[in-house]
Length: 460
Image 1 (cartoon, one colour):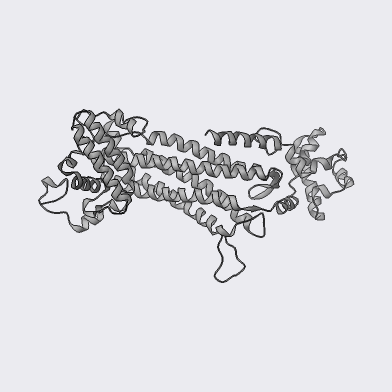
Image 2 (cartoon, helix red, strand yellow):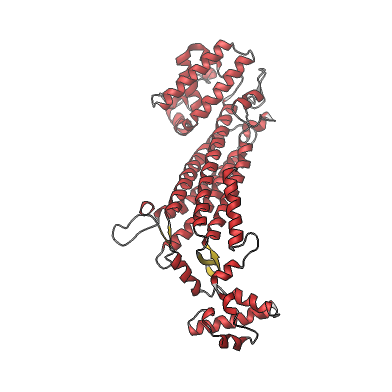
């Protein structure tokens, strides 16, 4: 006869191979805090509703406190034969408080229980991701504030395009990550919905207070349809997508750090704490943290595709396939937390070489657009101004100088309307300062961005 909690109708024991194949305790033990919190809320509600006595409810709640203490002290006897975190906790509870422990599962199923645990875990993770992302944004804002006057080439197609301030460049990432926070906040509100009371799939006959349980757990409400409640994993998909986008943004930062740390760019030096060396080349200082973070991004994408594929053919309602929802999320959770914290630390320790950045401005004729715009102020159609400027670039390239180094005579040979004031326009600092449009790279709009982000960080 089976000794499982569900084994009443079974005459034989589960084979060891099946137990090893179907167990989830090796990973879902990570949900112990959420499982215990959910069980305590459920027990308290059963006592309030008269399903069990208040004395029994108190005994269950105190016993669950003991279970939590054992787990956190590393003394808990995890058993693979009990399959999952729920059965492990309930079995140990019963050993501690006696027969009353068997009343804890009244009015619920492992289907709604695991969904509650997972929703709480995902919600808690999203809250931590948001906290870490705000911390990273604060570093971007701080570094931007330090480098308002530092100029570097802004690129399109990875080719020098126009001069921008380093502050503006840093703030571009700050806005990216702010969108991530907003996206995660929206996701978290859908994740933190209580499924308790849905039971296996059809609801329960017990007079449960589903709204009260949700409120006691700090959730935003209870389920609307019991079948959907136990079958839904959209909240995990959304969270995995949020994590993937965060990692995509981190990977973009990493890509630039890797390029900029190359001596051929020489825009940044990484701290020793965030670099490694070579086993054979003593001179090497490798941006391994940035490279690994860029590489781990692919894992988070894979985790999203993993769960999407698991869900795509599942009929209603609960299917054991859904046990496979936790491993991809737990892996993404670990990756996102570590990556956000490391990026904030690494970015804070980067040294920016302002002189190298400014020197690079001359390499790609980044003031060409300024000359074209200057010509349009003289009444020349932009397309013609574009053509004339292209000829000026070709001339400067042939002579091995910048546009600003061409003589007035040489420039007037291309267009007689060009005057001495052109050199003010071709100045890189002037080119940046003229971008006064809101959201532009000029000092005024950059200061406005900083103020808005600083205010948001104070009250997100």
